[in-house]
Amino acid sequence: MTVNSPRKHLVLLGAGRAHLQVLRGLARQAASDWSVSLVAPHPYYIEAGMLPGYVAGHYTLDDIRVPLDGLVQASGAQFVPAHVLALDPAARRVQLSTGDALPYDVLSIDVEPAAARDAVEAAMPGARGNAMFMRPMHAFVQLWPQLQQLAQQRPLQVAVIAERLPGIELAMAAAHALAAPHGSRVTLVAGAEPLLAELPASLQRRVLARLKALDITVLQDRCTGIEQGSITLASGATLLCDAPLLAHGLDTPGWLAASGLQTAEDGALQLNERLQSDSHRQVFVVPPGAPAEVGPALEANLRTALEGGAFRKAPLGAARLHVVGGGHEHAIAVWGPLGLEGREVWHWKDRRDRKQLAALFAR
Image (cartoon, rainbow, N blue to C red; front, side, top):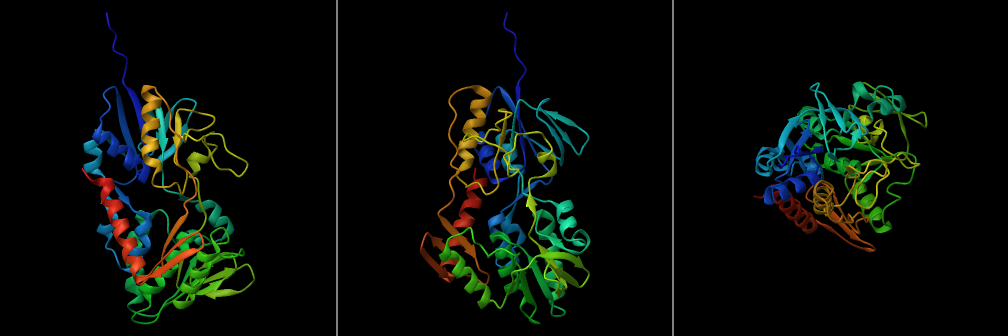
């Protein structure tokens, strides 16, 4: 007599790019002996690389935000609209905001970086009540048009608090979008360390020149507090500010940091070359900033974890090509010491971004 074993359960936490590629793979080759659940707080995907273009006014919200329902249905997965509250890797269970505890055999995590709001509030008192956070993106894209409308009525002093490239792109896009008709001004509060020191020198030079061309004031100082109408800096200075935009303090979500998965000395999750947690091999994690090519390797490794076979090494090397939106249909592309910038680079970036987004949802 043959006894049918229960179907294995794959749970995907987060609707990141890699998970969309996993769903596309499942749509092409469905799994017959395991089920799939996608857990995400919202039923759509927002393309982070096109967010500055949305801020600059080059894209509508529908250009960068795509509903998940068609891809989820084609893949055979079940969509679970919920936030994650806790992860118990020992019990192989995820606690959801719906009150449900979702069990899994294999778990994959591809979530949007979180604004560590408690830590940000401790470092910048008043941030929680007075700043507009860039993350989560679903909230930011709803609030941004309100700021644009206000800038149509009077000139604004806007401060973008950011130390890394996504926030600097946001500052350049905002400077272009808010300049007319009243000449709103943008200040970039970039922290005490040299701007973009971890990136190629040729990219640093071009970004700094672009910030100057957009008349963005760059302050190498830390924000230590945010009040209505002003922000306080570590130097003791006070900066008048109508709208603080916070693209700072992105971190591992609290529920993931508290899960007990093994971490390195810097607090980052300890993963192997297959994207598995070193302490819990049934848990896979897509690290922040992973290249687009990681999705197919993740799909293959999830199938291997469920069905057996050989694992693949995920391509996690740092990208050599850096492409940065500079507002006003301007972009910068740098490959090592080589670089190009201008309108033609923007049009190339626009075509590439649209093509990649469409490919994620192609049937």
